[in-house]
Length: 190
Length: 190
DNA sequence: ACAACTATACCGTCTAGCCGGTACAGTCGA
DNA sequence: TCGACTGTACCGGCTAGACGGTATAGTTGT
Image 1 (cartoon, rainbow over the protein chains, first blue to last red):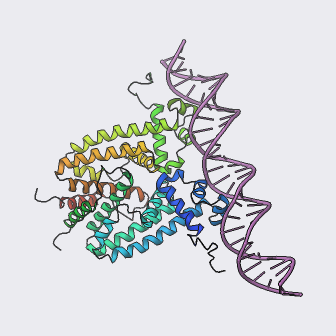
Image 2: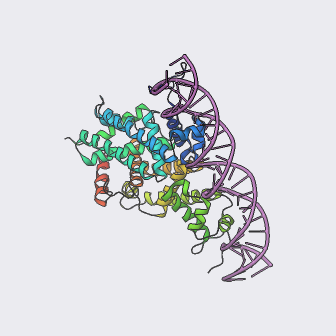
Image 3: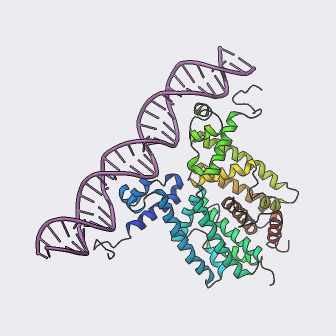
């Protein structure tokens, strides 16, 4: 009954999570097409049978990453709300790829959404709505909040496109600071 | 029916273009995975042999859409530059899905890029760079130009995500006008 | 005659999913 | 305390069908 370490040397990440991680990685690095069951099981160093023990179908695997993404995003909404430097600062700075679990899960989710998976689209839409309401709460202007969200989305697209090209765009700390300053101009005297 | 010498300027509705259209549609509506050779030929009402007569491989088909996208985008950059209401107004208003050929081609291209096709990523990056330089030319401030591009990207993501949901976001003309007005605040004294 | 197809059959590989088997820890009744 | 049994976690071989691509013979419009 109790969770078993099973191996004194390695209380390592449970197989289930390793499979989810592998699926995400494949989605992020190779797109929907390369994220096959065989590839996932190989990447997680689990047999295909083992994979299907934990996730009865590919659909179940998709549900798994989506559920995890949703949980991560819910946490993040709280982080945005309570960020010391303010919600806008936090949102913008974390919109460029940081390699965080949420980051990876979010990109994986958007790959799935691009494959027109309705569940993925729903989850992504919900996450965005959650973020938007936090920003709205902070800036007290729906249009400005929308615009900030658009910039955040744009940053996501951008860093996902230019993953290996540094020249195109710089997402340095300095650049982000300038961006945030610029966003400040959107807010009038109020 | 005019004669169709393989490599000259296309007359009316050549099979080659219908195949490209079908491939784009499938990419847009069903993602990379659903855009198979069988599906493409069926959607274009052409036999598989006919498809492979025009495009010797799937790679050639990808090259086809990418080449067409690049040409369309090159034209568009000129449209942005010479738009009566100004480049920024034009860029923002055409960032939400209009169903134009460029629009469709661009989304198709980004599906391919999400599948990590390096050619697709290159073409998309080039297009963005071209747009950016037009906007830079118009606003005389690199940071502001960047930010406007981010907003444009954000709009694109958004309308692609909420394709069937009208409630989430309104991309009405009025909303776009408000957005453009807001962007005006980014520009200082000038 | 020739380009632009259609129709059909085929091939090797990949893919999702299924199934029988294994190892092993824990439970339970006698 | 022993043997029968149960549940969990996993292995790896298998199959049907999809996929990209090849091949080839026949048809049609100009």
